[in-house]
Image 1 (spheres, rainbow, N blue to C red):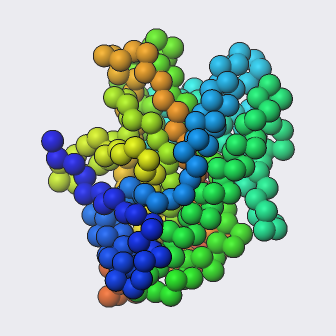
Image 2 (cartoon, one colour):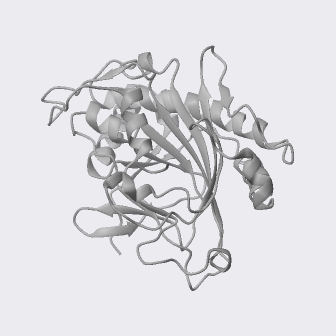
Length: 314
C-alpha cells in the first residue's frame, strides 16, 4: 500500500554539529513540503507520562454524563465536551454528523514564564488530571519551540524567526477519547471520530495510539491513506497559519480519524494533542519568493484562530 511521504526525524541530530543540523533541516523541509507531517524521535518525553495521563483521562471519561456536565467547556476556556458537540469537517464547509468522540480541553495562558492552564475548575473526582496535563503541556511547549527553531533553519531564516513570537504562546492541550463501537453504535453516513480537516495554528504534536479506527492523511495523488506510526514517536503536523507564513512552501496536512471499526467493536483509543501558536497579536505575513510560493493576506493570529474555531462548535 502507498504510504504518505512522512519523514522520521531524530532531534538528537540537532546537537551533533553542522552537518547533522543541515541533514535534519533538509528532512523537515522535504516532509513538510510533501505532506505537512513528520514523525519525531528524540523528543525527551517521559514514556510513562502519556500512560499516566491516559489513565487519569479515562477515569474522567468513565464518569456519569451528569457528573462530566458539571465541567462542561464554557467560552472556549477549556473543559469537557461530549459527543454531538463538535463537527470538525465544518471547518472545510462540509456538513456531517457530529464527531464520534469526547474531549477534555485545557487552554493555557502565559502571562508569566509559568504555563497557567484553564479552565479554573478541574474535576475533583480525578485529582491527578490537572498535574499530568500541566506536565504534558510544559514539555510540549518547550519541544515545540525546539522544532520551530529547526523549521526556521529549514526555511533559511534565523533560529528565532518563529520563537521570538512564542514567548507567550496561544495554545491548548486536547485529550480526545474515541469510544468503542458498542458505545457509539454504527457510524452514520459521513460520520467519523474526527472529520476531515486541516489544523488551524502553527504546529500540532500528537501522542497517538495505533488502531484500525485511527489517523488517516490525505495524499493528493492517491487519496486517503493510513498515517504511519512507530512506537516511541510523536506525530507532528503543521497548521494553516504555518502554511500561510511559509507562503505555501509547506502545506497544512489534511487528515481525519476513522470511525469505530465494525471488525473491532471494542476498540477505544485516547489521543493526546498539543496545539502551539504564537501570541494572538502577531501579524502573520507570508515569506516572499524564492522561499515562499504564494503571498497571503496578512492576518492576526488570534483573529484567525477565533474565526476558525467558531466553524466547528457552537
